[in-house]
Structures are given as structure tokens and as C-alpha cells.
Image (cartoon, rainbow, N blue to C red; front, top):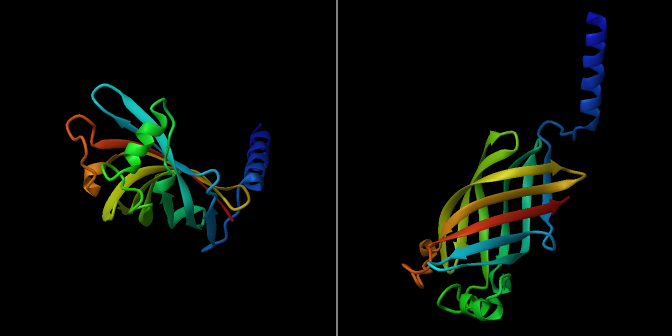
Length: 190
């Protein structure tokens, strides 16, 4: 019986290692963000309603060491924002204006990772600098690292509130929530 259990464990460990991604000691992989698949979704709320939309990305890269995210950056196309609820073009035009994003003047936002601390195998606290609306501020969020496999690609997500007033976007404070809920979906390939 002991031989059968030992044999089963050995076979299982060989099978698991055969299908696990291989990372050499100190191996560094750089992945390029797939801008066709990646995006930053947003939900903004006010006293009587909420609105949804997204921003596409224009570029970005992430750095992986031994299967772990360690750095990177990406550029958000603020001028490419799309409203996805019935408020449509009217709201899109208002968000594009100087009342909110002033997208003609500030057409892009950048995020640069300054540190990554894993809290679980697939979760990490990511700290970085966000430049938006002509201002730069540090932000911290939990990222769910779904894949760092060199052959399958990188995929991570994050869901968190961002206080728009930190970046001087103060229109409608009191009627419109200052926190905008963000959902980042980041895909990258070697």
C-alpha cells in the first residue's frame, strides 16, 4: 500500500511539473501590452444614477522575474474614452470637456509601477505613480495576477476606487461621487 501511494505521489509530481511554466533562476521576461484587448473600465455614480465606460490603452510593458510581476508601465488613451450606457455621446462630450478630463489638453494618462508585493500566489499589492489631468500622485491597489506564462502571456486585473479630486477633477462634488470605480484588464505578450 505504501508503495502504491508513493508511486502515485511521484507520478503526480512529475505530471504537475511537466505542465507548469518553467522559469530559470533570475530569468527576466518583458511582455508588451496588447492594446487591442486591454482596457480600463470605469463606473461613476451620482445621487440619482450611475454611468459606465472605458478607456483604451495606447502602449505599455510589464516585467516578470521568475514568474512574478516586478515592474512595468502603461499609457491610457484618455481622449479615446467611450461611454457604454444610454447617456452615450452627450455624457462622453461632457467627460471629454474641461469640466472633467479636459481630454484635448490632457489626452493621455500614464501609470508607472514603483513596487509589487505579493500577498498570495496570485495577488499582489501594486504601488505606482499615476499621471492624470496634468497631475501626478501615488496610488496603491490589489492586482489579481492571472498569468505570467511566457508562452500563454500575461494577464492581470485590478478593481478599486480612484478619488478624482486628487487630480483636480472637482466638477459636481456633492452631487457626483468623487470616487470613480475602476476595473483594469491588462493583457500582454512576449
